[in-house]
Amino acid sequence: MARREGFDCYCITFAYGQRHAVELEASRTVAARLGAKAHRIVDIDLRVFGGSALTDAIDVPKDRGQPDMQTIPVTYIPARNSIFLAYALAWAEVLNSRAIFVGVNAVDYSGYPDCRPEFIAAFQQLANYATKAAVEGKGPTIYAPLIHMSKAGIIRTGLELRVDYSITHSCYDPHGDLACGRCDSCIIRHQGFLEAGVPDPTRYAPPMGGSADRSRPPK
Amino acid sequence: MARREGFDCYCITFAYGQRHAVELEASRTVAARLGAKAHRIVDIDLRVFGGSALTDAIDVPKDRGQPDMQTIPVTYIPARNSIFLAYALAWAEVLNSRAIFVGVNAVDYSGYPDCRPEFIAAFQQLANYATKAAVEGKGPTIYAPLIHMSKAGIIRTGLELRVDYSITHSCYDPHGDLACGRCDSCIIRHQGFLEAGVPDPTRYAPPMGGSADRSRPPK
Image 1 (cartoon, rainbow over the protein chains, first blue to last red):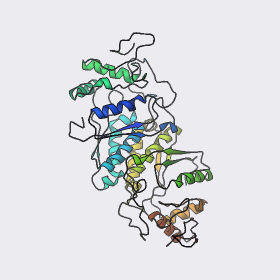
Image 2: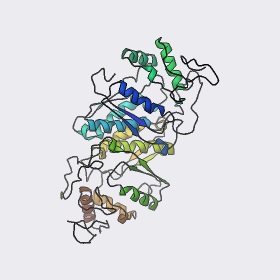
Image 3: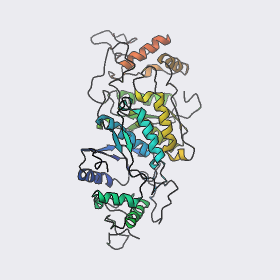
Image 4: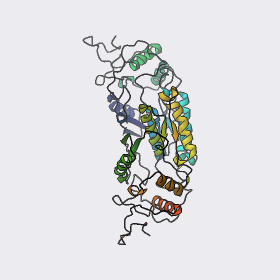
């Protein structure tokens, strides 16, 4: 979406001790495919503080059917998006960039406090004071173009922009580079494809002892 | 100052690729001396973005006499305090802490945008939205007790609290564990001791080919 607006894209990925570290390799593929001017993988280790299913040994919830959209999930990571955006703000200043895009979404998973519009607005305010660039009137605008979109809407928009969803997944607990199909994130993504009325090209792991049909999440 | 208020102190130091890495070792000594409940040194590498005399190969300015307090110094690091506070916010949440103390000062060095009261207020607003703790009404208050104090006032307060200044310095370009006495930060600190009317116990490096008098910065 940033590229469609004419921006040169500098992509940033965080290695934060996530158990789904396969996303780091995938991010290289995606950034290259999208024609990023540069891509940095920044090493930050949130395990030093502990406190989340995504970095600790807490089990990722599975097979919950329709996820509870109101409760903050155990997969919440303390202040994660604040840290991510603070790093992005630093790189934006070095690049003289006037825009930061972040893919948070408040519709399908309103439980994460740092995916809400109020949070993005507060970070914009912070960015307006935090940097030399901002003091000089050249600070960045924070864009969260997905924030109010449904998962189906996001998927349709991506297809218009020729995103190859087969090289991506959203899984919290992947098996190698295959999605589990059973965590909340996989379930929400698959529902998005169903609602969008398009095939789900996500590559799912086969169910335990089950079939090799990868066209749908294991039941 | 936090300890005087009755807080249990969990101290956080950042290894951010600073050339004055001796401060990391000093932080262990200081945290232990102050009776910290825990101390974490968090490894973050801002060199991945470049852009500051403190992490790049730009020379630290020396012998500038009275530093220019209005211009943003070349030692400014993009979004540094935003990143530091975002990490502190994460650890505070894991600890169920209600307070974050940060030692920024806006008087002696108003040139840093992320040392200003406006910045701290904006970060407080961010913290009010960013975390699960905040959503539950248990987020932290950001305290910056030094922000409006003069360097002399800070030094006097530290002495009241029995801070041993001989195990600390503020140098941007130390020689081993000795302060250079010539960078802006050393000059401002030394002036603080002069204005406070107390001896400066800072351990300074001898001047080039000069005397071994370490009771004052080299001229």
